[in-house]
Image 1 (cartoon, helix red, strand yellow):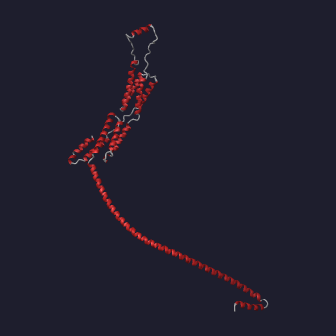
Image 2 (tube, helix red, strand yellow):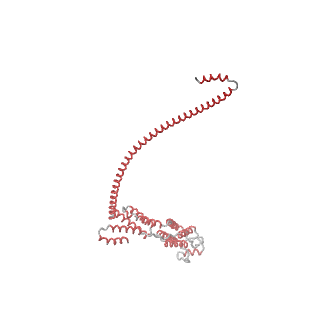
Image 3 (cartoon, rainbow, N blue to C red):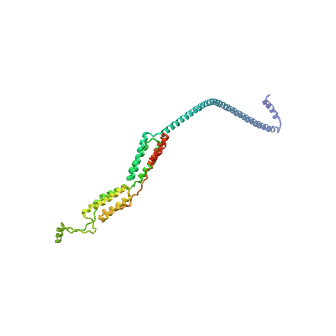
Amino acid sequence: MNENDSTQSSAPLTAQRPGKSAPRDAAPRGGSIALALLLALLALLASGYVGWRQWQQRQSRVADAHALDAMQQRVAALESALASGSGGRANLAQRLDASDQLDRALQAAQQAQGDRLRELEAAVGKLSESTLSAHDGTLLDETESLLRMARERYELFHDAQGAAAAYALAAQTLAAVNDGAFAGLRQNVDAERLALLASQPTAQADASAKLTALRDAVPGLPLKPLDTPASAASTGAWTRVANALTGVLSVQRDDGAPLAVADARFARELVALDLAQAQAALLAHDPRAYASALQRADAGLAGQFDGSADAVRQARGTLKQLAAAVPNDTSVQLGAALAELRNLRAVHALSNSPAPAASTSAPAHAAGAVR
């Protein structure tokens, strides 16, 4: 008998109970139903939570399984990589051993090559120290001749430019020498050449040009005026008598008057000669003779030429400017490069002497070359 039948059979019984018993039974039945519904809801929630948790656990297990599979694959890949790396290390170790052997062989060959190069350098050094080639000897002779000629030209004529040109040729000739022992000599040659160029006064060309211009202007400078002659228009008796006696007797006074017109050319030539002497002294680097010649030329202009003329005043002003700028007498000491060249050649001659008996004569030869 099921529950429905029991409820149906009990219904007439309850309906037969009199009075107030029916409301009392309805209240417990409603509370039990609510409690049953609450319990059913809780059971439903519990079952849903349990099902959700089981689903999460199932998903987690699936994810763990996938991660495990991926990890196993990575481990397998790492194992294969390690296996190939171990094989590569073995090959690399073999190649390193072969490289070490090759390096040792190359070092031994390089050391042998270095020994051969040192022996070759020693042989070349002995060969260069033993003899000078005929070509180098000719070049050294030419260099010595140029240096000696430059020194004598400067000492005799004080020609700094000519001596500097000879030094330049000597430096070019010395540069063609193959022996490295003479390489340092070029510095001394260049130093003396620069000293010669520096000793040449920069204003010499300007002063020489001014003196040349003065010499060209001297023939046109006016002389001091002569005594005023008698008027040619006078026709008195005394004038006719004087003209008649002129061919017989000529009387002049000597009271320090300027030169006659016939001697004007002589006065101009004296001043031009003084200017030429000043120019020659300038080219010869003789400051005393230069100043004396300028003073004589100025005295000639002051005594024989018209001082009121503009050309004469301008010429005297130019002479004063030239006298104020007298060049200094700066001389250059030459011969250091020539002495060094002779000493080097003497040392080579001494080192190349084959016999001990020649060692006594080599110093004498060296001393004669140094003089």
